[in-house]
Image 1 (cartoon, rainbow, N blue to C red):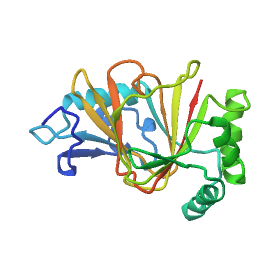
Image 2 (image 1 turned 180 degrees about the vertical axis):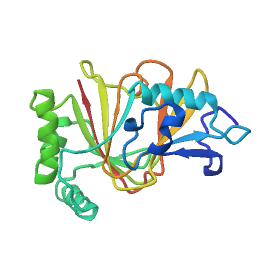
Image 3 (image 1 turned 90 degrees about the horizontal axis):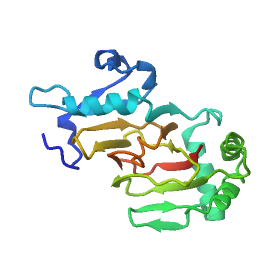
Image 4 (image 1 turned 90 degrees about the vertical axis):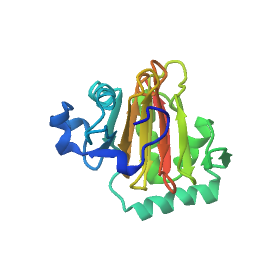
Length: 229
């Protein structure tokens, strides 16, 4: 099996759910609900040791935290989508076309927060973020509409004073994040369900260390992202 930046095909992947975690020495509570971990198969059909080691480190040491957004109350995904795209059509929430075929709000945090707050549902999230950070606007806040649904391997950059990158994902069902250690070649993936809140610390986001990450199969999803202390 190659340890390059190629994402493995489904036939070469071992998919593990919460029930499988004790066997692999990962706390099951760190993989809630519909999240799943993806590892490459070795020649004997079991998980590659270097992949498992990376997953145990990133997930087990909480460099990558998997949870669900719990600030906004449950709402049918069709209504969430309608509310979001009402903001897009009425207020140009995400007017920038990125080269990776995604529409972005850009990094004008105050503008993005102001537009999201025009809808009572999304305002709850903005208010919670601001309250958590004890400031009128967070370090940074932006929104993305994924058209193609892919983002090549990269490491994040965050503003001084922030320590975490938070990614709240809506819709989809097949969206995956992959993590790659450039030193060892270890790789593992995370299936990211609707309403997921993935938090990366500086190690998980690649600001420190050797781990990059990428996204695939995220077409027609939206993302609200923010950095926090």
